[in-house]
Image (cartoon, rainbow, N blue to C red; front, side, top):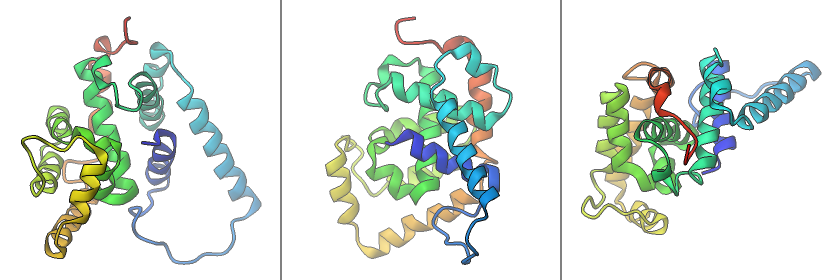
Length: 210
């Protein structure tokens, strides 16, 4: 998962109240110089937040989106983008998995979550969503995962891609419809839930080996 790119996409969605990523806006005129500068400033801000690694500084960030970007980037780094998830505490894993799902679905629907590296942790992400208080979103993910093997769950990315491509159109259409339900924020804004969870469990966040 390209954490920075995904987080930038989510930041743009949240800060501009943009429509979901799969909807193409009406054509507009070329951006003005001031708009170009604003995008550059935003990109630079994301880079700065993504470079933060001091947890005390991260948890001191008052803006929830800034906090989410900085903490998720840190956890991505420490866990090798989720490949070494077990180096994180259960609480940090919960935040990481919810943030990953949020970024991936906003970028390309549940399909993107499943076929990218984050899909390796599908069943665990269902539990993480329930832990932060997003049972309706957890149920959406559970419904998305239902057509795929559960015992054992496909941890291999290539296998998940093959399974996704092999689905009949009727099932694919039903699964794609889950994206619209997600974008309606059935549990409220998902970021609010996993950010609040992390802030409430600050004492359980630490660097690996710390």
